[in-house]
Length: 114
Length: 112
Image (cartoon, rainbow over all chains, first blue to last red; front, side, top):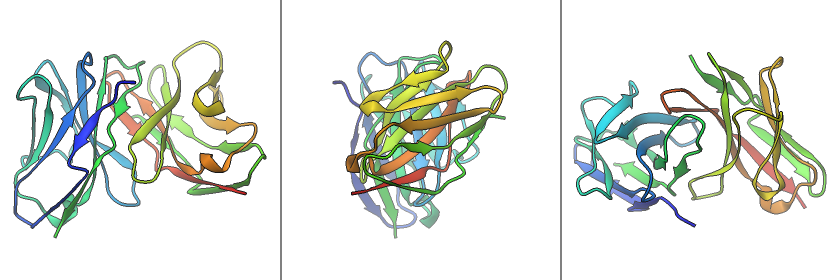
């Protein structure tokens, strides 16, 4: 069964450092997403990406965040200068498209900012 | 604005008993409703969805959900709970822009 894979599973970084979270979406999917789940809280939408550009982003996705699909397979989330409150589980997701389709989520990357 | 509410943080049920995890939604337009399950240290796994058609939707692992338009609810159900069903369950609605809006999650514990 195809799956979305994320690396690393756990990332520890010092405040102010840059981190890149990596995702390999399912190969025939066209829409890609990042979600965030702060411990004990709901899963929050960060950004969606289609046709090599951001299609939608939330208020959380400010200038410190960026996404790209550098090589046609990986989908990355970069956090430029991490803050303590960026500590969360970050989920990548992909879907074939369209609102009635389900999305497939990766297992998540736990980011800990110290 | 789209939103979902899961009024129960925790649901406990004895093994073999029926279980219900509640969800209510608020959407503009037609609702696309989903249930996802999250096992410890794992990502979100798709369980089932309602798009249109029959109000009772069947999904993975014996789960089903009933769409009730008048009550704006989409409760998750299973006739006979298993210990292995213990996990975190998220209700979600998806809008035309493809963004998911998740509920706060309900922790289900099935007691042997």
